[in-house]
Length: 336
Image (cartoon, rainbow, N blue to C red; front, top):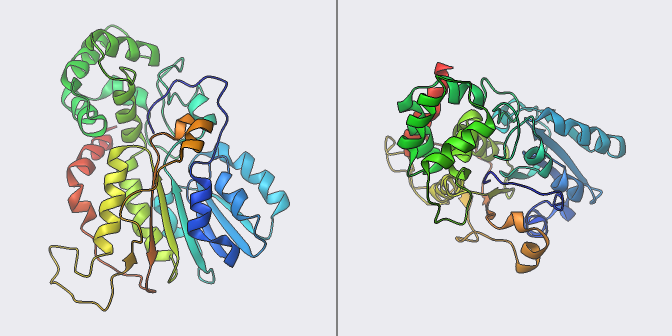
């Protein structure tokens, strides 16, 4: 999701809720995994159906407060795990009938307004952007990485045209003082004299840093792979994305496993009776006019989903190879 300045008038809404509930059909029962629990919007709606169970996952420990409230009412049907969704394979699911796995890759209103997390360029104080279970923060990224590393991060994860100019200015300024959130916004503003875009000058750089700090590319890829593995036959994998890179990864993964062919260029072509996944919709589902009127923050949301057609655990995917350049930039974080 884009880094956004939020006013107090906004309330939290689970994005595309009606569409997701229609797709996963919890009225027929089963276990569902909410991989981005957040404020618990999807989970609460699923638990309204008495024959359902929800396993909720979130890397942000703050979400446990809401999870504890739900546990009081649904102790036998709800389980919360403070973990990254890339670690889904670590869940003990031997006897679970997993009928749906959900990802909402945006951020909750509480996260965006949390000054300590610093996801928004209106935040005050030190740079952070950690969502939980991180190895480093935005403060270390901006104040320690080289010019070359910074410009790569801004370019690949933010598609920032002025990535070199901004990185150069950061390196020069940090010799004088430790750069804070406010300082970074001012640096970007000084470099980008004109702004012909509808978005804030700092949006792309903040998006890039947030993706990098939270390793969002490898997290998403591993999350998709493990979610596909744990789904049962006829189960649904649904993902809501908020920026083009996320959507590109999800779209590629879904399409590559819904085609009747080997998707790894290193593997011989294998003819199968049917592909592993089935896409009923090739185009993404977007918010209705009514939802946009009620929640303008949903404007960039795109929902894609697939149905698993067979109980098959091991499969090949070339998705890491496809997005290799992004993973390599993400691995710059190993220096910190």
